[in-house]
Structures are given as C-alpha cells and as structure tokens.
Amino acid sequence: MRTRPVILHLDLDAFFSAVEQLHKPSLRGKPVIVGGTGRRGVVATASYEARKFGVGSAMPIVEARRRCPNAAYLTPRFQAYRAASRVVMGVLAEVSPLIEQVSVDEAYVDLTPTHPGVDVPAVTELAEGIRARIHQVTGLTASIGVGTSKLIAKIGSDLNKPDGLTVVPPGSERELLAGMPVRRLPGIGPATQERLHKFGMHVVGEVAQATEQEIVGILGQAHGRAVHQHALGRDNRELEPERDAKSVSAEETFSRDLTDRRELMEHARRMAERVVGRITKDGLCARTITIKVRSYDFSTITRSFTLDQPTDSLPKVLAGVRQLLDAVEVSDGIRLLGVGVAGLTAFAQTDLLSDLLAEIGDEPDEVLPVKVTEDLPSSKGFGWTAELNDEPADTELTPDWRPGQDVVHAERGAGWVQGAGLGRVTVRFEGPHTGPGPIRTFRSDDPELEVGEPPVW
DNA sequence: TCTGGGGTCCTAGGACCC
DNA sequence: TCTGGGGTCCTAGGACCC
Image 1 (cartoon, chains in turn red, blue, brown):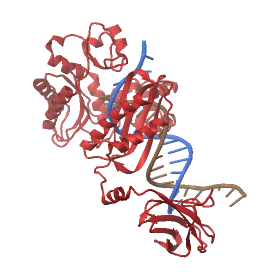
Image 2: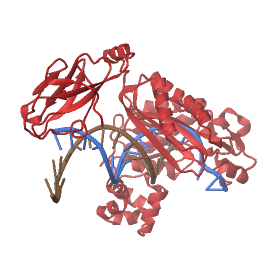
Image 3: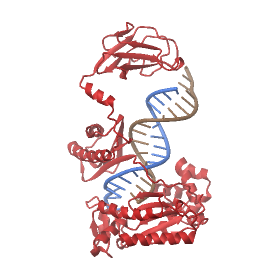
Image 4: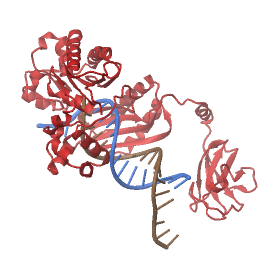
C-alpha cells in the first residue's frame, strides 16, 4: 500500500455539454443536453442546469424532453470533444509522465515519478494548480480526487463535483468509505447492489465487516475479492498507461424494428466497413467475428466464430457476418444490430503460405479415400493426421475412428482426405510413446495405402 | 420512462488435449 | 467398465463503466 497521496483522478465536469457551451456562448447558463436525437436516443451528458430538472445520463431522450422541454438538445460532436480532451491530457503530461487515460473525459495521474514525497498540503496545491491551468487553457472545469490509490482518487473526484477538489489523507480511507452506499464503489452496479442488499449490506462498512469468504460466496471469486478489498479501502492497482484494444465493434439501433434480411445486411455491411476500416488503419487483423442482435423485446443475443487465421479482409468479415445473421430469427423484429471483431493481432498475415494457397485455390477440392492395409503397432495414444503437399489437410476417418482418436489396437484404418491438389498425400500415425515424429508414414504411392472409392456411411 | 454506443472483464460449459 | 485431472480454446451471456 502506498503511504503518500500520489494518485490523482481527474474528471471533466459535464464534459460534452460543457464543450458545447464553450463553443456557443448563447448556451451558457442554460440547460444543455447532448445525446441521441432519434425516438430511441438517450442522454449522453446533461449540463448542471439540466440536471436540476432531474435529467441524467442514460435517460431516454423522450423522458428528458418531458422533464426539461426548454433545454437545447444537441447531437454529440466527438471531434470537438477529442480536441478538447487532447489539450487537457497535455496539461496532465506536464505534471507526470505516468498517465492512464480512462476515457475522453477521465484520467489517472501517478505522481510518483515527479513528486514521490508529496504530503496533503503539497498535493492540494499541485491539484489546484492543475485545475486552474485546465480552466485557463480550455475554459473547462475539472474535478479532482487525490489519494493513495486509484480507488480513493476516483471516489474523491466524485465528492466535490463540479469544479471541486478532494484530497483524502493517507490512513483515513476506510473511514471515508464506511458510510457510503455500496453502489458508490466502482464495480458495483444495480445487480451487485441488489445482491448485497439481499444479504443486508447497504453501506460499504457493512461489507468491510464481513469476511472475504462471505463476500466471495455472494459475488463470486474475482469480483467478491475485489469488492471486499475495496470496502476495506485497499487497492494496489498500478496505472496502465497504454492498453491495446482487444475488440472493435459498431452497432446501430434502428428507428423502427427491422424484419427484412436484405435491409439488415445493408446495415451490417456499413458497420463491417467501419470496423474493418478501423482495424486496417491500425494495421491490425482479427480472428473472431461477432454479431449482436437485439430483438423488439430488448432480448439480446451474440453469435460469433473464430477463423483459423486472422484477417483484415472486408469480404471475409462480411461473409462471416452473413453466415451468422442467416442463422438468427429476424421475423419478429430486430431493434439493434452490431458487428464486431476480436482476437486482434498486430500485423497482416499475408504470408507466403496464404499467397500460395490463394494461387492454387482455384483448383476444386477433391476427396481422396485412403485405406491403410498394414497392421499398426499395438499401443495406446496413436493419432491420425494427414498432409497434402506437406501441409496439414482436412481429414476424416470412417465411423469406427474419429480424427485424432486413439488407435488402441493393431488394426487397419480407413478414411479420407479432402483438399485441392491431392497428388502428394501423406497419412501419418504417431504417438507419445515413440518420441517425437512419425512412427509410420504412408505416401500415396505406398502399396499399403490403398486409394479407392469414397467410403460410404 | 422504455431503455445509445463503445468498450472491458468474468463465468460457465463443452471440446479437446495430454 | 466406469470414469481422472488439469489446461486451453471457443462460445454465449451478463455485469459494469464512461
């Protein structure tokens, strides 16, 4: 545990609407609501003037209009927000090189590299300086929390919002948290709150008094342990300055539910284009393709599959999306469709092998039935593999054997191999007891490897 | 009230492997 | 015939965050 207040959390106040008010002076002092415009939109950010009317994030825009009809309703302009964000992050970078940007309007700063020995008065002055500097160069207000951990800094930045600062003295963490509703802990949402309530725990102090085993019993291993530690005011997570994206996706809620597959595929194509465009821009390839389908009744499913090789090819992604979508029932009405990729790897696999395969790819697949007429050694753990032109090939065995299944007895085997260019097929049996490598390899011109009619089953 | 869009992490079951 | 144990990968869903 850190003993000095070196972790700082910065949160820009009502960020989207604040940028809008900055750019358009006539909006200043008035309720501003930024969010989706359509019938199914929700509030992204409400200015503090709008919050007085009970408008908050994630509220349906329809409800917001009811509560605050005179607000300015704006669609987000992410370019402007990113530009303002960059300026703010630049200010933080002057304070310490160790920064973790959590989102466009939020970041942690670890002061250890530049101010390892700060105490409460010194860090208070430093943080007020940061807030003043941000306001000076951007006109935006920020709230800052400072403490011995990310947890405490994050809780602190929320305590004096907006335009506020909270420094939590080392040693007072557990006491600070004890009286707070459990929901205030990061990682506790509606579902977890409900679970804890069911066990009679409403404030953080009650969780802290339970044993870790009790909390793990309620919330599961990983979550339970983290929540219990947090309730005790303990958190030794380090900042993670640059994190590589693990997935990229695009989704769209339609203004009316769709039932037409052609229409759905048109939307899917546009989303796939955006997704592939984003990964190729970063020189990435993806192995897993996912679709997300939300029905008229808000029930949501995802379907995915994983390719053998990563790809950045739009046609391949599109073919995968179509295949997944074809297997989903859409006749009752689809409210939302999403397309995503995951399993991202750093560079394109346009290697020699795929080029070679692409060259011979026009050759139609053939099925080559093969049969081994020689007795195999009697030993457990032998498997069947096949190669075509020295590359692993699809292969299957007769129902008595399945691919990879152990060859238990001295038996004869039969199966088939499928692929293009069957001129040089190799069928190989190998097992763990013979050391690495094949113990017996049959080639297509071996008399023991019979080539015949496709097996019938 | 009738619920966006972009992510992350965790869990659980089944397949498969050793 | 009754039936192991651990590890990894894949898929699906859920909770959570901003």
